[in-house]
Amino acid sequence: AQKITQTQPGMFVQEKEAVTLDCTYDTSDQSYGLFWYKQPSSGEMIFLIYQGSYDEQNATEGRYSLNFQKARKSANLVISASQLGDSAMYFCAMREGLASGNTPLVFGKGTRLSVIA
Amino acid sequence: DVKVTQSSRYLVKRTGEKVFLECVQDMDHENMFWYRQDPGLGLRLIYFSYDVKMKEKGDIPEGYSVSREKKERFSLILESTSTNQTSMYLCASSLFLRVQETQYFGPGTRLLVL
Image (cartoon, rainbow over all chains, first blue to last red; front, side, top):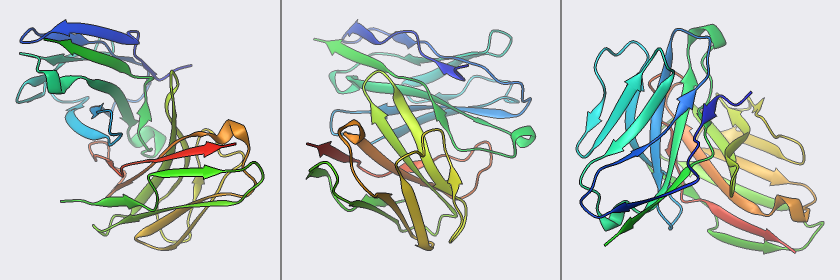
């Protein structure tokens, strides 16, 4: 079974609008971490934001915030005030915790975001 | 800043050739990883290493091998390339395998096998 599911292969958003990229995950561990990465057309993977399973508040980093709903096992990325430079692939990833002996990141299939002027 | 470098950005090889992809990190990280990225499939883990001379298979190790003789260097070896190995290869490193540890990525190598 997929551990990370990103159901939106592609999305469009108007410049200056907010956009939500969906991510659901599957784990039986109590301790885990959720990550979002951005991949521009140049190919490098840029770390955006992290949410721990025990964190009580949603993570925020500048224009990025993570809408963490633990009961629903979702970790959606919200980008506020979209800019043309936000056009990229976005990947959700998870690392499971102690019960699995700590593991490398597992990635979803990604969402391609296009920001329209 | 953490820097992860990969030996080539683009490679073109013929079927059956041997390919070495090298990855070097400059932050004394314990862990290094090789992923391949294909459209619609995301990133899939090929191998990772948590120490010098140690390696663990990922989700898709078939057709690949790795070498980690020095802490800073992790090589991916394709012994006899096939067209289905045409892909983007991404190397990453991290200090620990703690839950909150970020993985830092290199710029990627786009391999085309003809």
